[in-house]
Image 1 (cartoon, one colour):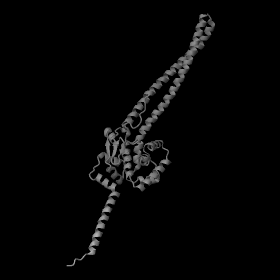
Image 2 (tube, one colour):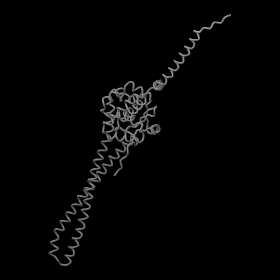
Image 3 (cartoon, one colour):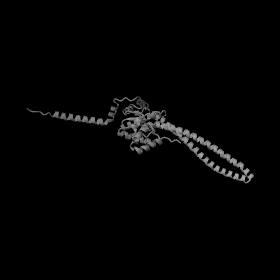
Image 4 (cartoon, helix red, strand yellow):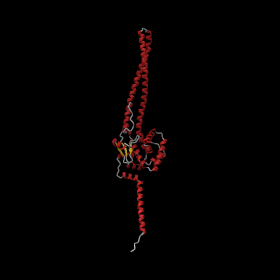
Length: 331
């Protein structure tokens, strides 16, 4: 019996094995290339955003794509204890209070009505961190160059200070932070950046308005306190000068009183009488300056009370942000 060897079957078997290998490699490569999309799908498969999270997305005017990333990060609005636990190592240096740990977004539950808008801006700030993480290397290079150019064209003291801090503590995260700060807090950006952010916001200016709204609560109170501090400094200077003048006048009056007593004791009546009117005029001027100084002191004390009340309100406002801002000392 003769056994026939079918070369075509062998060739088919090799081709089939090669095809399976190629399909396996393609699947593996696709899994790597679409890893983040797969992770987002997995995170969203059974996720239902809480009503407040949906509201934050709506108020942030996010696009469909941005909403998907926002929800995939399972945003949580938390009170002090859980927020501090989650964000202890990731807290922002900006006025916003939130963090993105590379997987989840946490937003501090600020309840002070004077700070309406802070949660919306915080949520969008952290969402942009999640988006930045998902940029391809080429996209990130392009965006980095655009935010750096924007920063160089600006002269914003607040942002300059933030960037200086990040350059010291996290030099590799400056562009990432600028990407979030510019996108949520700066109104007029370059045409390229404005176009870029339309991928994530249908009305980015609404988010910027929220930022302006709550930041003004701090700047207004700081301006009022600074104005009163200047008034207090001026009053203190005037009070100090009056006290020096009073001390000098007191020395003159004491010497003149002693001279007049000597004149009267020695019987120099005419000389004594001639000195009485000038002496009394000096006493009257002295007493008048005392009255003026007392009025200045009363005005100063009243302003201190007003200033300290404003400082307390400011510090309470800062405390609403978990003491992220430096408290102002009382006088």
